[in-house]
Length: 177
Length: 165
View 1 (tube, rainbow over the protein chains, first blue to last red):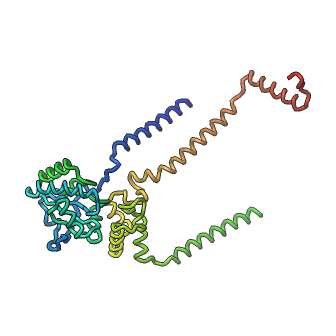
View 2: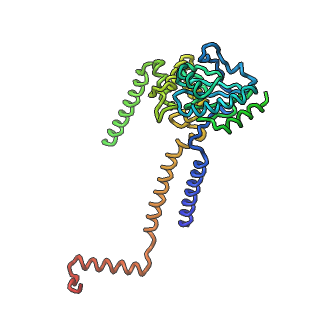
View 3: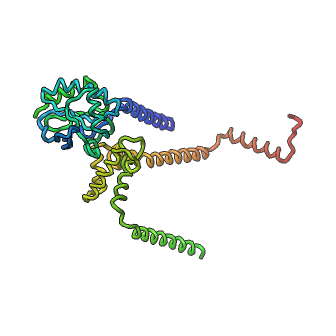
C-alpha cells in the first residue's frame, strides 16, 4: 500500500515535470505574442516626417497595410529596412500600403537611414509614443500586417524574414474586402 | 483571576488596533493625480526595461504610458479599466503581478497549495512513524531487548566482568 502511494506520487511528479518541459521547449523564447492578433487595428492619424501630409489608418481601409515601427539607431532595423524596401518595390503597385512609424528617433536621422537602407513609403512621427503603446510595441523593429478589413493578421518581432514577409503580404492581398 | 486579566489585556489590544486602523484610514489624505498615476504605474512592467516598473523607468515608452494613465485618470477611468487597457495591448506580461483570474491564478494558488501539501505529507509521515513504533514486538525481539536491558543494568551496577573482554 505504502509502496503504491510513493510510486504514484513519484509518477505524478515525473509526469508533471515532463509536461512542463514539453510545453516550455515547444515555445520560442524570443517570440512575443500579441493580444492584438485577429483584433481591429488601433486607429491613428500621424504626420509624416516630411511635414506635408497626415496619414490615417481609417483612410487606408480596404487596402492591405504593412505597419512597421522602426528607428535609425536600431541595428536590426537596417536588415528589416532592406527587406521592407524590396517588398515595397514588389507589392506597392498591387495596392499594399507600407507605413513606418518612428520609435524614439528624429526625422533627420531617419532620412539618412532611408537613404542608406532604402525606403520611399511614408514615415510618421509618433509624439509620446502613443501609437507604439496602442500597438503594444516592446521594441523595434516590430511589424504588423493589417488586412483590408482593418484586422491585425500577424505581428513580427525583429526583422521580418523575407519568406514570412512574402507569405504575409500575399495573405493580405488575398483577404476579402 | 489571572486568566481574566489576560483576556482583558487581549481585548484592549484588539480595540487599540481597531481604533488605530480607523484613525489611519480617516487621516489618509485624498491622493493627488500624480500619486494615483504612480500607483498604477508601479503595477506595470516597463516594456523595454529589465525588471523595472513603468513608475521607476525613465524610458520614453514608460513616460508615454504614464502620460496615458494620467489622462485616463483625469477622464475618470478606474485603475482596473486602465490596467485592462494596457493588458489588451501588451498582454498579461505588462503586469508586474500575475492576474488573480485565469491561468494567472495558478501563481497565487500554487504556493499555499504546495505548503498545505507539504504539511499534509509531513503529518502523514509523522503519524506513520508513530503508528509503526506501536507495533507489538515479536517474542524473539522481546526476549532480546530484555537481555540487553539486563546486561545494561549489570554494567551500570559495576558488576560486569570487564576482564573477560
